[in-house]
View 1 (cartoon, helix red, strand yellow):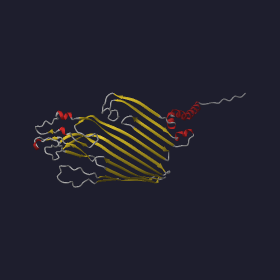
View 2: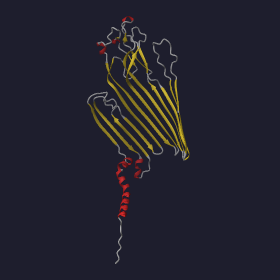
View 3: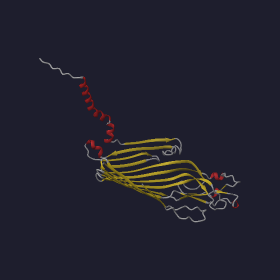
View 4: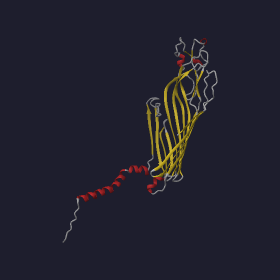
Length: 368
């Protein structure tokens, strides 16, 4: 009987073991990445509801989180996704995805949005978020007028504040009793819309729109002037609720082209700002008892400040490039912007002559 012996070297065994380990790596990696794959192929919808209690009111603690007042809060979050694109790994052929989500619902800092898309063809999205900035909850003022308004007057019973050399410049007991506490805050509400469409492998278009609304007030130190009234004194200050009543609309439209050797993008951008007021006015309580027979107000002189003027900005942008050879390429861009502002001037009543013109007629051109 003849017996054959096969000799297997240690090196051969090592190589075979290494190859087996390499073949097993994708399986192990897939197992390790299974949670990530599941997230992409089988989305998990979530709804969260919680309760929170704030022990005491504080504008500073709730400055941006919406928890400025004491008491209980019901807070919710949700995220829901779907579409036939998630069934691709189960034999589906669709490419559509949709999503709706909301965060911090129940507070002044909430956000909600939704989107739907057909991969490689079109997309659509809407969103809304808001944020309240609590400035203070302890501001005191004798002025009558609502927070966010642009006119503030003093009651006739308030009287005046004597700033003459013999005046105390202190508030009387009656004037102190006229002080009222106001909560000062500003609200920002943002609404957005976006849409995109791909015509073919070369052409696509994208549109984005955003509407920003800002209301409320911020505190402002304002300087008074005499405005020609007998005994009225200027160069003194008051703290006012400077109104915020702004609306800003922004638009952007872009068209893209991409070829085998070249690319081109053309876009238009616009920003339109509008202030709901053109000025803020208030009563001047300061007077000088040594002037005009010591006649204390009222009537009170009225002071006026201008608020931010309406303005608009439009810009055209062009960019592109072409590859002549692998070593020779040409790329460039051009932009042209036009910014205009033509709100009417606020004339100081003390001026004895008319303004040289009624408005700025301002224009700023920016090219690059």
